[in-house]
Image 1 (cartoon, rainbow, N blue to C red):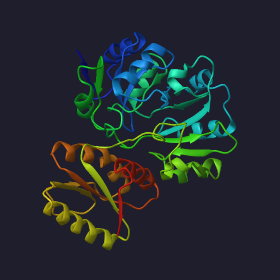
Image 2 (image 1 turned 45 degrees about the horizontal axis):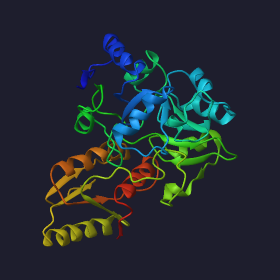
Image 3 (image 1 turned 180 degrees about the vertical axis):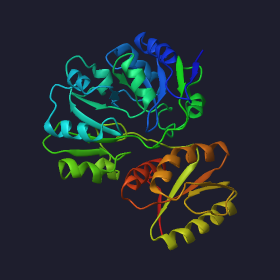
Image 4 (image 1 turned 90 degrees about the vertical axis):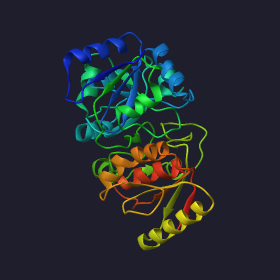
Length: 339
């Protein structure tokens, strides 16, 4: 039995206490953050953390992010907090930024995917912060079956986990829609491990140039130092094709692909910033913020409508567009058509 707690109207202290009790008892709670919904457990309880991997079908070497509500919690998790981490925390926490640091002995290897580093962030959602404050630092990947699109609505979590976890907090739609930006500060030079809800340009204004890990561009890696680096992610059941190039050429190519696949008997969905004639269409919005917020919802809804192929319009790879294209290319398994 899964308890679904409605907190769409904001933080309810009594309901938070109920959800916090589940966390402290070693149970699983899905909760909203400003990025996507997370599937949480007590980060320092190895048995509870292992249940996250079991519920998601997540490989055990894919590390989790630990969510905190106070900067002092970072020192309880990380053995070294460099100047760059302090500067970034002062500027961007609470917010969609995760930093990777050397872990303290108290943090279980189950939480870190077997690594000697721990990924930490302070979410900017009032429900998430209240839940952490009422319980303990919470390890939480996105609350979806491993490999599938991340959830931006409680309904998405219910589709994947109802009857499989103890509690789901419904806080309405998430604001940003793509996961946090992950910066590795455990080595000599700051390195981007995953683009996300905080544009890289903003990070570099604070700490200077940041290297981009090859995995961000699709190179296969043996060791995942962050979620989203090693394994298939964000994929619906339908085949996804991303069309990239000059805007006028992209529009023409998408129309051609729709007709090509429909002629073969496939139901075709299109997700784009302009309308297209297709079996199903999802309008992503006009701004990069709207596109990011609607990205995973589009993949899930087109899947529910039974399309065989999803053709996605590529966007400019700057600001939040960097994270959007990272997710789209992964969802497509790097099936990219250039126009």
